[in-house]
Length: 98
Image 1 (tube, helix red, strand yellow):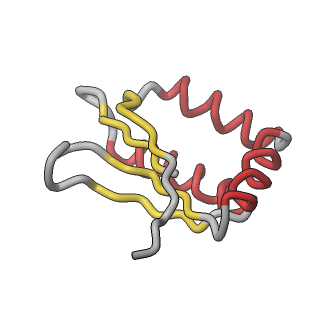
Image 2: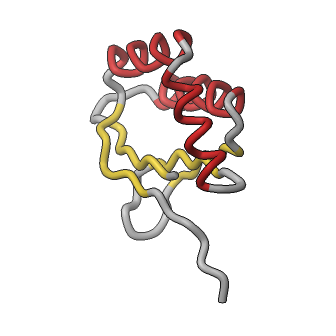
């Protein structure tokens, strides 16, 4: 799963990175392998929050668990209130063996 966002003009990069770290801790708590990327080609200036799972089933369990976690709801409210970036797109992908 990938969430791509773009910093708003005048936003604070330190705040954006701290929110990403806080979000990563919650996703990891619920089973995700998380990474954060600065886009340097194509959609330059965007950031991508990536959460990986071993299977579609583990992804589903993580989403259910996150949805039931009051700390995640608090984080979502904090992130929205901070208003540091705008959502660009989200992707959910599965690997295709070649």
